[in-house]
Length: 159
Image (tube, rainbow, N blue to C red; front, side, top):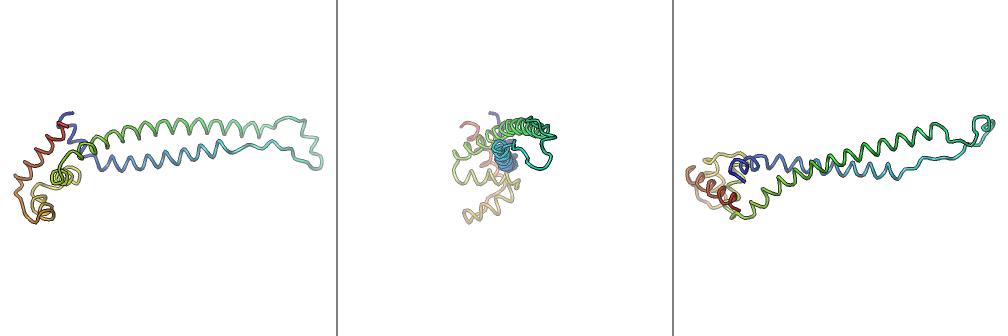
């Protein structure tokens, strides 16, 4: 993995994580819809009443046949949608896990600074004055923060 790809993944990390959560929920809902559709049965009961024998000749009515065909087409559509969602979820998971795995390999200070810089889009000066002060009750120059960012990025690439 090169530096440009890693930085792009870091910048898209928050968005990818949100998309992943949304797609996983959509997948769960679609699977539930498919399950309920497969469990539902079309009734083939006869209707008893006055003059019902005129219309019925012990044949399955077109309504029942149409309902069965409609359910089958819905099942096929949902199965295709599930496959599509599973592919999207897999791609997003890969992107998120690449960043997660590499962030785990960093020290606390490096991780916090990289997340603030790339994921949250804060400037090196802001990180040096605010975040570094929150973490360690000290301030650092933007050049020092930039060196930490560069070293941590190189460390992530080498992992």
